[in-house]
Image 1: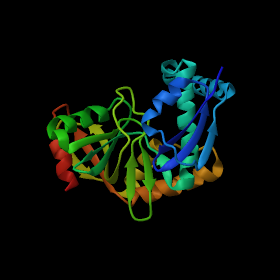
Image 2 (image 1 turned 30 degrees about the vertical axis):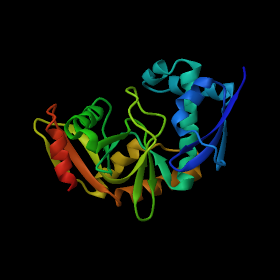
Image 3 (image 1 turned 90 degrees about the vertical axis):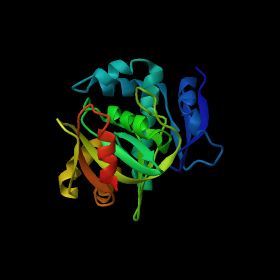
Image 4 (image 1 turned 90 degrees about the horizontal axis):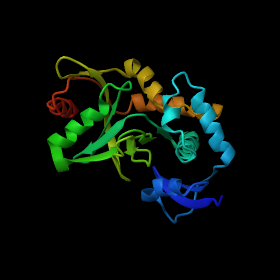
Length: 244
């Protein structure tokens, strides 16, 4: 099998990637660059097999079933390898759906199946061209000393929503199902465990410690809001009002 080598820039970091499948190169095509790499990643057939075993060992192997092809497993492996390196650069992978409205970044996170992607669809329907979808599944966050920036990534979820863009992150909404639409502020102490659950935890001990510190900084850097919503698109207006 012929390997494929390319440079990609994600969240401001350039990676030199050598992979086994051309589909991985195509998956990352919107992020290709000719700039010099800061990090090098080599994915071998053994790495792909290790990814398969890792997913099958989970309590719920549904993700493994969805990623049963070697090509899909390689894309997951690349995402994981990049996520392991991110804390070194004050960045983390965050599980959620992010968009920018009038250039202001917001991020929605929730337990699987709660409806965060449905809610971002309401924003696109209600606010039209004011909204740009950043990433619907695995955005990267740069958690700086003064500000947080949300970045698009090639891992855009089952609906493939997002683009190679970024926005200053102003708020994180934790989405809950509710009878009516309302927003309640949350304290950093309340939301920290939830943020931790939705942030990729590196296996490397040093990177893990750095990641925990970054989540703590994140919890003190943006608005933290609990959003109760039903299937009424008016929930988008309620959520936006809380951003003001």
